[in-house]
Image 1 (tube, rainbow, N blue to C red):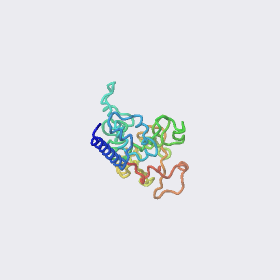
Image 2: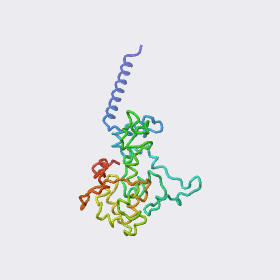
Image 3: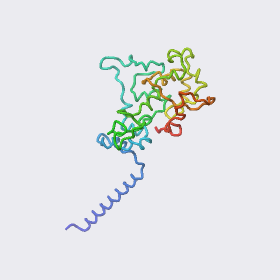
Image 4: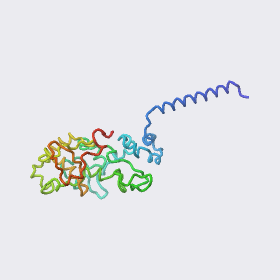
Length: 284
């Protein structure tokens, strides 16, 4: 039979281990709870991809407070990836520019989609985009709104069919056509700009002066850059139009604005979306 002292020693060790484990657990519970996806991303290649995919950070309401650091913990490849210097067909990226890259403000080497919007010099100078500016989350089981009891509603503005964003409320803001008819221009800007001294401020020094006051843009920097080079304005207002329609910008009131509302503006909102107003700046 074992000595009573041995049994007492074993009991003491068990009690000590229980106490230490309880103390460590208490300390963990006192710390702010990080997203499961972020925590697993830091644990190396053996994390559970399925659990990370369905982490609450990918759904509302958690995604509304997600920071860029949390998103990039798992999706850092969007900034790490670079374009090829030469395509498989032998076309050099440095000498090949698309039609929307012809403005004087399009500078630097060819770059990827996400890098152009987040880390290039112009992005840092004029924009304050976050991952959640465009990405508002969606159920990975569903690629169509309103398709199940747990999917987002049919009238959602979070994403559209087979797209993880709603291009009409995100991309179109900066990549829609310039509405020359509403603006009263005699022809598209690239044809009529010399008539206005190649300056948008020829008219907009007094018209629609309350502009760019949203969290995803740096208003003062845009105004300064636009005063130096009209391509800064035109770049986001028709010069890089990926779509053939114009974005119906909110018609914010400005000093000296006429009280009569023109027919084309009667259905326009008068305020920007709530989440983009400067009192609710997206976290970085």
